[in-house]
Length: 97
Image (cartoon, rainbow, N blue to C red):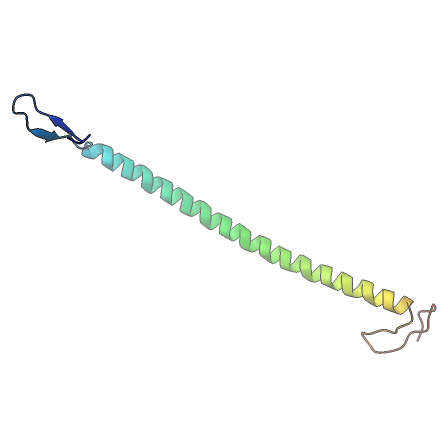
């Protein structure tokens, strides 16, 4: 006999174990639905927050890139390589054209 079956002492026939009451199943289903809805709401909120963080990160990367470009331009100017933005040579050490 399996675990779900027991012997009926009067007839010696295997009898199936009773199923969980229907109300218990409905209760579990309702709890599962509530949990799914709560998690879906949380997921949507987190996805919106993630999108906002990605946008902010993009802005920060652009600002970082602009600063790096400006720093490189100043280094090049100090070395006397000229101003790459206007292709105008800069006199070494004076900062004048």
